[in-house]
Length: 429
Image 1 (cartoon, one colour):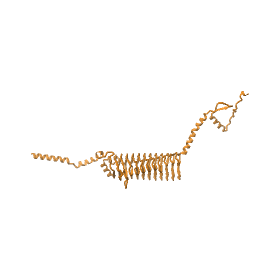
Image 2 (cartoon, rainbow, N blue to C red):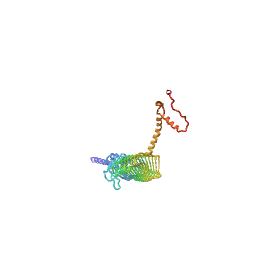
Image 3 (cartoon, rainbow, N blue to C red):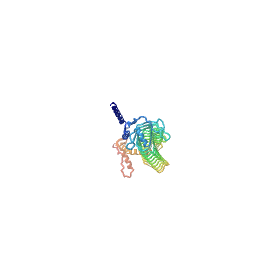
């Protein structure tokens, strides 16, 4: 009996162990699906680093690689427009090593890069040395990132469309540009700060139909904002002051709209806004003060320059070898050499501009018109004491009356002379 009991106990133990270790194929498939869902919805349970934790560089190439990296990193999202991948809060400093802090290329996945601090990237070969480098991507959003002190670019975007770059800071000696777009269309670059870079604040190269708005691009070693062979862009409400070269410059760039920008105190070549060999652009309601030249056109045709303020420059508005432009309703005051100057430029329309000469002329005319009735009133109110026979009399003769009398004497009117000789005094008889 003991042997039978021992054998039963042994068989029961083995049966229990078998139940614990056995996993059916169906259960395994369901577990995998559950795990995939959990990675997307609860990344913190799978090793996602807290914001600001130092991280190595990230390089993604293609849709499959993006999905695999997102799974590994525990990033939110699935890459669809409704649920983009989210790369947030990374701290990447390459400390001068070759490469980009974050590089994403050749993907149609939607993604957001936000709140990252990216620095120290170095360019070399095909590597751009950028805080963020995007090549051949669409529908991405770059927001609230700091991309300073890279030995290349703050943000570099190439052959990419319909992306949004907003509220990023690209300052402090990025060796090239704060933000650079090459061969990229229909992007929005707004509310970024690009200051103290070693070349340009924001640069567009062969890039059309972009919106560039509310950016601050100051104290850069080159241009504040620069467009080369880039057409049909809207440039609005940007501040481009104290750059070494021009505030905003267009070169071989056509059909752009430039409105409500502030471009003051730019040194070097020193133009507030410069159109070089650029046609059919509209430059309206900009402020360009304290530059070498406020607004300059050279070799540029059929542009409209209207309602701009260009004061305290050497030259307010300057056209050189530029024909068929319209320059109207601009205010150009207190410029040291010329308010508006056309040099070898024909068939331009210039009207209704306010210059120093016209301003003081209008001011003088307005003063005369204002003071004339006041003077008549003052003169008309004066009283004069006249002396008759050596004695002072109380007779008050209004000067206005005398003025009217003066005019009357010169009209062909009959009048009666009044003998004003006093009658002899009876005492003299």
